[in-house]
Image (tube, rainbow, N blue to C red; front, side, top):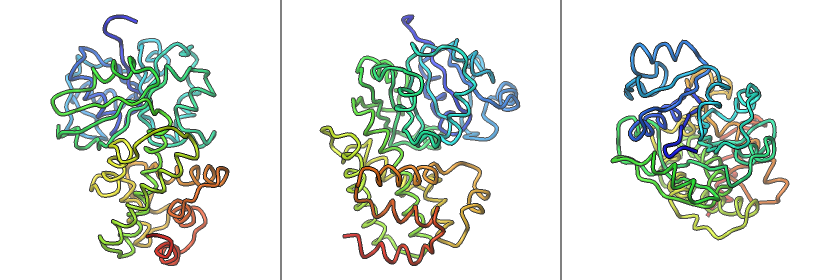
Length: 331
């Protein structure tokens, strides 16, 4: 790898746009794969993403844009994937280039539905990429606040601290602070689980529960997250660190949280289909709740909140009844 690596971001959504913005603070050129050629043409003409974070303006001379995923794989040393988990397999299936020697970072907060694996595990098991070459970018951080250059914190996780430090160097700026972790499994599961808990908080809000109950729900969520992750990957970790508790809090309470918004609509009486149609962005927690439910069932973890969200979203159970029952299981 050259002294200054070539880095490419894969995805056209808000999180991908935010990561490109971060990298542009430190690199002369950033690769950006978007499958929509019309969006690329718009960025070249207007200096911003037409669909997401339009307040984030780019110097197009810094961007190496392409709608050809194989071209971008060839271009970059470090590949950062920020594609919604529901579309990961479809996009990866387009890759014919050998990328087994590349450094992969996942900024995807979900599970690959076809395999039931978090993204890092999917890369490892499906493409034989060693864990030392896989990393995770996680919060607590909302893309919208990055676009506004509000102070934000990111956790960069990798089994190889040098790779985590390398990427951290090119992401950190006056408004982005970074922290290094070696818990790639735990941080990625936490990033997935917090979306489910944000849906639960949203449902509760939509049903008319107040702040008092929602605080209890969040308190129980972090303990449930700890139990879940410990069953999957037992190692020493402080669940109260920002990558776990901090990311949960911002996703559960922020006005920018699409998962909370989705849950709020469900609580107010929207069907899953109608809520999805109303939103312009994907609520990762919808897909994650099914995968997490199946994983916890196989690992016998106690997860009443995940169970409640799954029952509402996938078993078409009445949220009023489900959450009334849930109130008796929390403390």
